[in-house]
Image 1 (cartoon, rainbow, N blue to C red):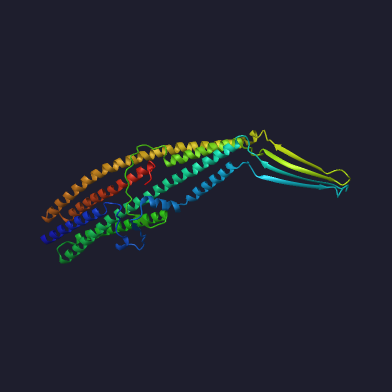
Image 2 (cartoon, rainbow, N blue to C red; image 1 turned 180 degrees about the vertical axis):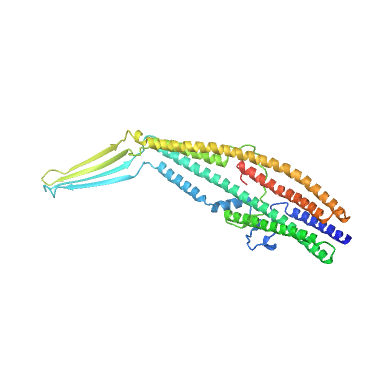
Length: 433
């Protein structure tokens, strides 16, 4: 039995050494496990990713943005702004028209009377309408630019979350692999000792049960990492991951006025206000028109030909009643945008509070976890000595090992979660990587 105790003591020391080394390897989420394909997968499915040391977080966000579906909306907004700008820069408020008329009396009196007339008609701006059109175009361009920045921040948040989800899943897989390897070595040792008659069969059943549990946990961890990788590849349309994506905590403590989401909403409000001015200055039924024409008459009964010119002006009035629904609809859109801004302001403040609280809690939990880890390591050493001297049995040692392993895993998980909380805080105050 003394030989067996020495064997378990050596196995426990090996376990502690392997855990410490593995914890050091994954202390940074920027160094995921070398390659999951090199590990012994329990399932066939594999979603590979590769670390690209030349790829930065900012570059990854820009590449993701280029393939993000909302880019089509941004492009359409820019095209709309260009079209409005062309309209506002035009000297005329609408299209032109050229009319030509020809008349004779051949099918009636047939006295040789002929007449031809031409008229050029063009639409002019109503009073203040061109200024409103130019203002609308300027606000549309500003809204398109701000919307692009808001989408960029949205993509940054999605990329940040995807990367740290992989980091968390990868850490859990490494810890699960450590547990699995330890339980496998322990099972092999116990099997040999049971065959020699040095240990009861109950210890073999205990070791087998422990190994199956760690195997099940490893399978779940593999599936979780595969899911995280697939989600990342689906979002970014790439399997490359930056070698370094840690961030420094932003010094901002409040939501800035130039927060991309707020700036985009304010730009929309300004655009809606410009739409109201455009609706007020525009007659939806008729626009002012100016026409210039000429007329020529021929009379074969001896009279001289008659040439004349004419100028016509169309000035609409009384359109306020008919345009009132259009103006009311523009006011409705403005009020919707104002309401959305209030909702957004509250949401941003709530997210910032949650990010601040999460950061504080994680820091406190990490300090406690580090102390618990140190205590767990000391307790494990004491129990190893007790087991060697025969004061405790295998079950007691396994319980202590399990608690110690859990404490070490929790400390490592909180280290990664702290970096994740920093990225979440930066996202909440609108800071780009």
